[in-house]
Picture 1 (cartoon, one colour):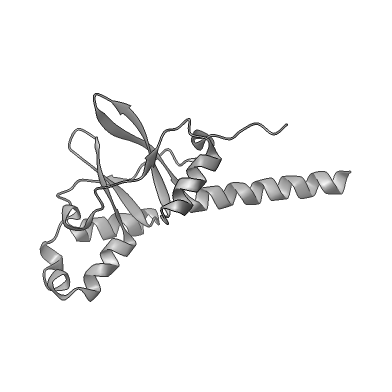
Picture 2: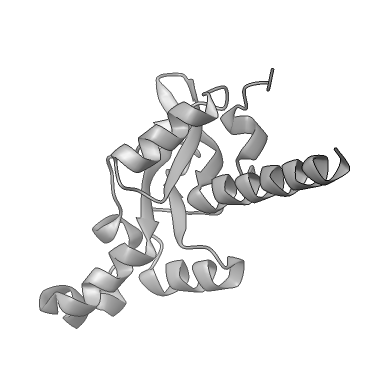
Length: 146
């Protein structure tokens, strides 16, 4: 029997963040520097405030009022405040369902305390696909050895 994988087994535990008042230029720089497609936005105490993605940034290019004022905008102007989250002990299949059903690219992994959500990781589609590739390679080796 194959043990059930949990989100904690596949998530990236280094959460790259910005603050709601971070200028968009800083948001873009951080995404490029870390080669990621989104940042978790946190309040000054570290609690989850939202997510800002490359797709959010791209929308500013086609919406004239946003593009006109891009240099004066902060993460709070574009971030998604309704964030789809999961817990570290969520079953990986349930997490995949959340990602596919909500048509998103990542889940923010949180722990809840003091009535707030605290980001402890990110589970992206890339993390899941990378694990699928590892499992596929392992099963190919086992099939070859048999």
